[in-house]
Length: 90
Length: 320
Length: 106
Image (cartoon, rainbow over all chains, first blue to last red; front, side, top):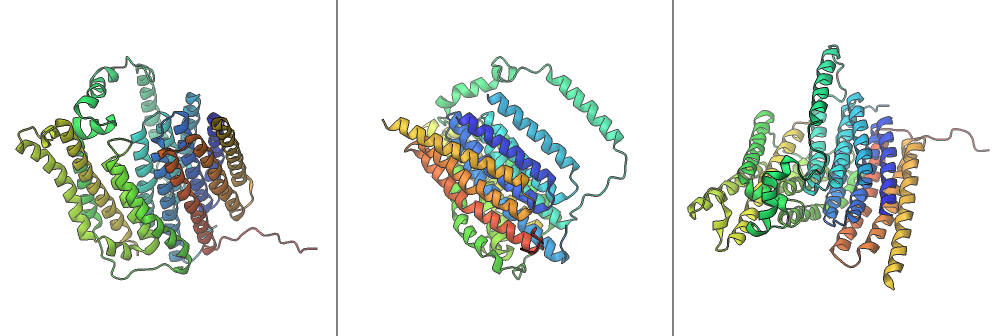
C-alpha cells in the first residue's frame, strides 16, 4: 500500500518536473518547485513508514519549513527585480 | 522495490541536470537546482543516509538556493552566450566520464558487506560506539568524537569562508529600512513569518541537541537557525532583521563558535588527556563524551549560523 | 478489534490523498495558464497532503510519530496556502495577465 502511494508520488513529481521545465513563466517554475517540495515531504514520510524508520519524519519537518522559505525568497527577489526594471516580462 | 524507486529518482535527477544545463534564465536555474537537491535528498533517504539527507535538505534546498538567488539579484538574469565552441570541453568531459565509468567497474557492488570500506575503520566505529561513547547515532559519534579533528578543520574552513566573503563583499549598514512597493501585500506573509519564526528557531535547537539520538547536529542546526532569520528578513526587511541580530554580533559569534570547539580540545589537555579527548571532561568517560559532543556541536552550530547570516547580509545589503 | 478498523481507515485516507495528489499534478501539467494551475497546486498542498498525513497518523497510533506528523500537517496547512497566495500576488504585481474568455456571453 505504501508502495502504491510512493509510486503515485513519484509520478506526480515527474509531472511537476515537466511543468518546471516547460515554464513558460518563472512563476510556473516556482509553483512547480513548491509542489515538488510538498510531494517530497510526503514521499519522505511514506518512505519512513515503509522502512519503519520514524526518524525520517525529522527530515520531512525540515523540508516543510525550508521549502517554504526558499519559495518566499525567490518571490521577494523577483519582485524587487521587476519593480526595479519597472516593466514586466513575458 | 526500493531499487525501482532508486532508478526512477536517479532518472529524474539526470533529466533535471540536463534541464539546468539547457536553461538560460538564471533565476529559473536557481529554482531547478532547488528541485535537484530535493530529489537527491529523497534519494539519500531511500539509501538510508538520514544525516546526509537532512544536510542536503537544509543546505542544498534551503540556504544555497537563497544565496544563489541573492547572487543572481546582484548580476543579470540571463546567462551570456558562450564565445567558444563547445567541442573541446565536450571531448574532455566525455573522456573523463568514460574513465570514471570504467573505474566503477572495479568497485564493489552496492551494499556488499565484504567491500574494503566496511572492513577497515567503519566496523570498529560501529562496534565500539555503544561502549565507548554511548551515543545511539553512530554518525554523530564518528563526526564529533572519532573524527573530531576533521570536524574542527571543517568549522575553521567555514569560518574562513565567512571571513573571505566579508573581506570581498564588505558590508553596509542599512540605515533606513527600504520597503518594496507593496507593503500592504505582505500582510499574510508577515503573520505567517511571525508564527513560524520562533518555531523554526525551536526546531533548530531540537536538531542541535537531538543530534546524539536522531539525524542532525551542529551543521544542520546552524543552517536552520540562519534560515529562520532569513525568513524574518524576507518578511520584514533587512533593516528590521539587523535590529534583531546586529552584524558586529554575528562577526563575534562566528569566532566564538570555533573558539568553543578549540577550547573543549584544550580543556582535554588541561585535564590530563589528549587534544579533543572528551573522556576526561567528566568523572565517567561516557558522560564526558556526551558533554564534549554537546559542547562542540554547540560551537559548530553557532559558527555555521553566524557565517550563513554574514554571507546573506553581505549579499542583500549590496542590492540597492 | 480496533486495529483492522484503523487500517481500513488509514488505507482509505492514503488512497484518497494519492488520488487527489495525482489529480493536482495532472492539473498542474494540463491547465492552460498560470492562475488556473495555481488551483491545481492548492489541491495537492492541502487536501492531498492532508489526507496522506491523516492516513499515516492512523498507522502511527499514539506516539511521538503522530506528534511529528501533526506538526508537519500544521506547517503544511499554513505554508501551502501562504506560498500560493504569495505566488499569485507576485504574478499579479508583475502584470501577468490571466487568460480570460474574450467571447461575449450569449
